[in-house]
Image (cartoon, rainbow, N blue to C red):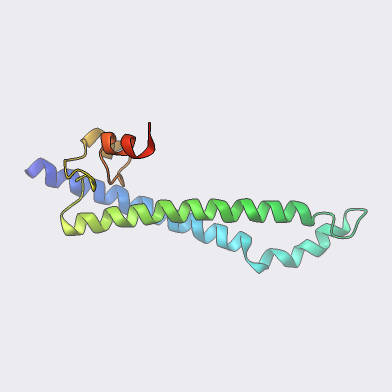
Length: 125
């Protein structure tokens, strides 16, 4: 039992570090996609023959950044969920079958909420 508690402590630290990393990524993405960059878009457009020639590139870049932000938010929610499970004492237990998630899986994906078998059934892999 003591080794399990030690593992949870280690996983909690890793999850907190991942949470902080994801929050920082979101902050940077939000800075890039905020209206602050629009101040420079008119100047960028003047470098092209057509007015606003860079607008399509900016739109694409913004769309990609927003999609990336969605992925980061999803991962952040999974990390926060794992931290809540640690607080409740349910970390490392499969949400589907109730069995313990193998340590190797948690080492690879500390925010995993399903064992490999249940995850494979869910995704069809």
